[in-house]
Image 1: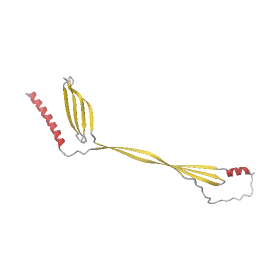
Image 2: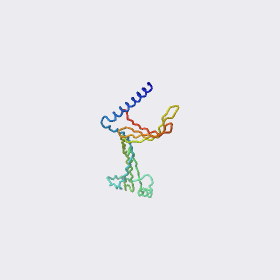
Image 3: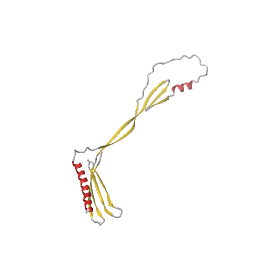
Image 4: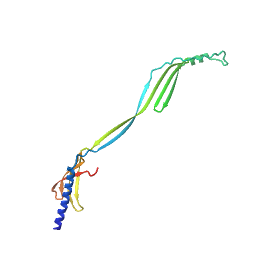
Length: 192
């Protein structure tokens, strides 16, 4: 009689636990879905390249020097070759993220042309957000039940999780006598 009473007591406890979980399921308002946010920050450097058209400067002032005599012999052809030669001067300034290049062309003691080009590099920050709200999920696996001496259940199982964070399981398998067994499960998330 004690053995029979002990089994009824265990069965009654199991039934009460299931009833408590079912009452918890049916009571209260809807559960708000929890969001999970994944942020990914991407910093890319954008380079702006600009080249201005050729600029011919105007003469602002001329300084004349009077020379009466020369103490060294003068090579006139060398002076004329130097006077008519076209020289190109290039100056590059690197200031943080700005590369500035000034190119001057000089001949016959005049600036024939000036070209200004620059590369400007600045960072552009892109924030990409992916928001995951409690999604429905389906899990598939195998289940094995038994003790050290005997295998009691072996089968495939499937668990479905809904947006309210509740899970329902269904399993099909065989017991130790190769008799088909169907199992069902219900799970609730405890806490937050």
